Length: 120
Image (cartoon, rainbow, N blue to C red; front, side, top):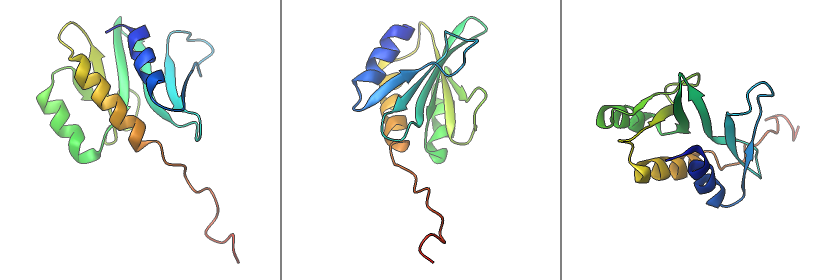
């Protein structure tokens, strides 16, 4: 898969957009929800390789890392909740899409930002 294909798939999910939050880095892109602006994927280049960070359930993260040599603890993110998919010749495109869709679902909820004391 190429970066453009990953972005295209992410944008096919409902109410999403791409964002370039790092002014000094025009390669890295975050894929976000329009309603809550949360990231569900971070696409970047690390040491010449294409990386995609996705959120996964903590109990599933370790299983993925053991099952696929191209899935590692997340680069520069919480390693309990996020994994990095290293895109290469042996990377299964269906796994990438499945994990992006799962990450999309896990980050879709809008957090209630009201204080627990708001109604007092």
